[in-house]
Length: 135
Image (tube, rainbow, N blue to C red):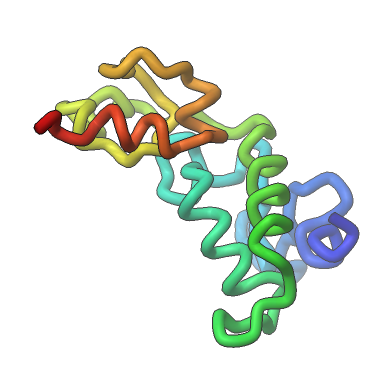
């Protein structure tokens, strides 16, 4: 996490652009806290975040030459996802048919009996298996 802190700060609250007039612009965005992405954002989904982190972090990394293992990307992403962030208003309308929302969307209601924690952190395969049509 020290590598992350170089850009995102020791407290994960990002690094503001110092010469911005309104001080709301970030050179490196906050990973949690009031100015971070909300709980309905694509980045609030563990699968999406882990893929992004592995292909893009630390700054300058490329998907052709990742700087971390898949396991490290998942662990870092799970840590970031466990931190407080703003709530998206109207989230209940994001996927009106809950059976169509992504497997790692950690907001309810849940049509399948799996816990919010499992939807957020996995394991995801049992959720995927339950969603498959029965033959």
